[in-house]
Length: 165
Image (cartoon, rainbow, N blue to C red; front, side):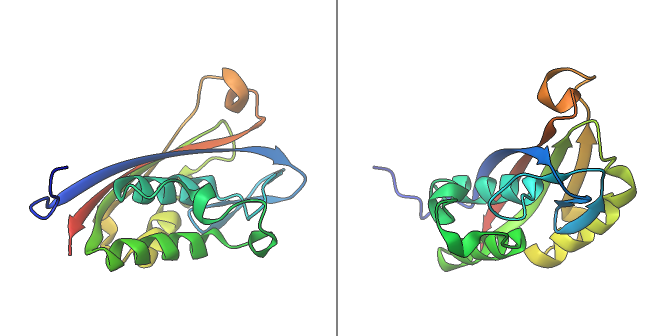
């Protein structure tokens, strides 16, 4: 097995999906975004943070968010996903890594992310200990194709670069 002591960077990617359900908002990147529906999830269902957590955990080769915060555990019922992100950042720090930058994409027809993108970037930057220009938040539709196109839910993708601390 090769040593990782000389490795200076690691890359991880994450993906998450949640269905819409009853409610009047969705959480995206730690920001409450008004919407005609909520998210069906064990936690607050923040697809953006969940994808980001999976990206960090993937770069660390520590599995996925479900391994660390199983939906079967009642402690995480309705939990603020920012707690999950803080845990993942702490795991990285314990292993001598820090987040260098993140690139995220929300996939869905609605709600529109653009009006909230700056607030999401600011929240994530603060939570990750990054400058604003190291946090990218984008959005796209699927041109009304698939479950996101039919307005059944949201998806998110994230890529993270970890650097040796």
